[in-house]
Length: 252
Image (tube, rainbow, N blue to C red):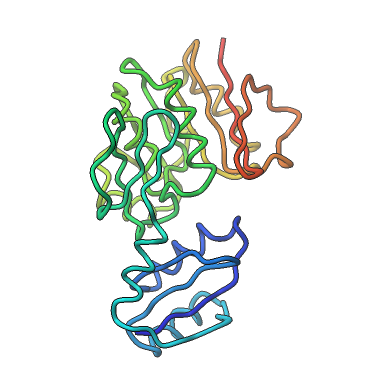
């Protein structure tokens, strides 16, 4: 067993971790300043990093058990908001009163450990109800769809332009998803629209978000830092975590 450490900023880590899983890593652990990826042999390690176009800063031999513990330690269970218990498969049962939201660290982006995902989950607690039709635009791993179902949403559906992400998500998320974007959704049909995407894409799709919302609907948008907030976005709530932002817009 070999491991490689590669430097990454907090903003890069989610994408890098997802890319490493797709490249065949046996496990990933977050470390100060970057991530460490584990591979069965050194040849596979070098092939993976060549494919990613990244150069690891350190390569070392590991015992066969180190990577298992390191990966599990890197994905501890988390309490999010008032109701969610974010847990990998090996975590113990949820505390009383908490909804177990199980995640697979090997999935595409969206394991739930990024501040933006956590901010979205906290906002969903406040606005998703058993009467809600929920749309997740850029659903990625499907974690927010699974959360909507735990909150007993009437309907939860997701879309993503990345067909590979949809294919991976379907392996562990039962909620319906389609390859495409919000322009395929009927006007006025969504009670809660969630978009955990970049500021640039948010700007591009803003009018479509508004078109899809039903009267009295709620828009929850994240995926960007506080400094990227546009003055054109007329939001009613702003929450932040580690300089990442989530805004809420209530339609009339």
